[in-house]
Amino acid sequence: MRLPRWRDRLLTAAVLVTVWMLLWGVFSWANLISGLLVAAVVITVFPLPPVTVAGRPHPVALLRLAWRFVIDLVAASFQLAVLAFRFGHQPRSAIIRVPLRVPSDLVLTLTGEAVSLVPGSLIVDTDRASTTLYIHVIGVADRAAVERFRHEVYETEARIVRAIGSDDEIRRLSDPPPVEKRRQL
Amino acid sequence: MTVQTVADVLAGTCLISGAFLSLAAGVGLLRFPDLLNRMHAATKPQVLGLLLILAGTALRLQNTIDITTLVLVGVFQLATAPVAAHMVGRAVYRAGHVRRDLLIVDELAEDRADAQPPSR
Image (cartoon, rainbow over all chains, first blue to last red; front, side):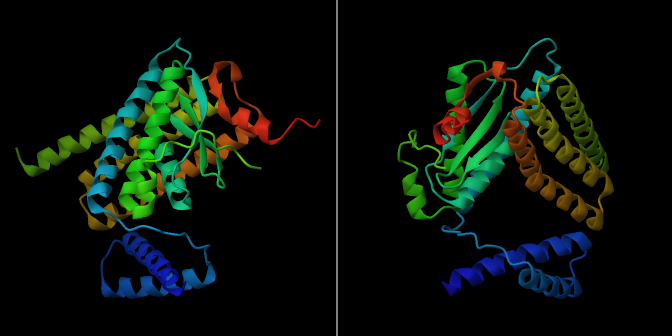
């Protein structure tokens, strides 16, 4: 249990030092050392609940994820801009349930972020116990469009898991989507 | 054509398309029927719009200290916009300010009804 904990702390420290150096804008030893000191203080004073990072990064899949993300972001931004300028057209929307196949907080968070950032979809609610996202989608005309969108969310999940997931999580992607999984309160 | 000219043209393109997307976000904000739809306009084209404007500014400034700050602005925008949108969206849904007549399907309502049988 000790090793993953130190790995998480090192990751946090690396991110904090990077932000620190970007804030100063000068890459010098003084900034590196003061950044490390600040990171150490932040980590001790504000401890966060550990995030289980089960997998490891896969560079090719990461690049594919980033590329698709940029494409989606650009395409969907312009679609939404067109929708905004279609005066007199009342866009229809839907709220759909997408239970993810991989039960991981990290995958839930990253999928939620990716889905949120791509225009046209907004996370209304999440259920951590069943790793379910409830997504509000704008500009869907009918049920077929809703199902197409649901499929896209699963594709996003698959890309994220392939980029940062463990072998076990990647295997789970071939499972059928857990349609019957319901909210447990 | 010098490198500087190319950078200027690129910066101009980025700034103009970023401004256009921000304008579209503003129009959508005024025009869309309910708050959930408006959140789409308020948080989304604006993300790409801001990134484009940051890229354009970076191309014009060409100064490491400024560019690192711009990178941070972009990163924090990407990290925080979905959280803000989710918090507002969730509050609005629970408060019931949703135009249900415009929803094709609402699976969250089905699940909430299953989980909490109407007791009142």
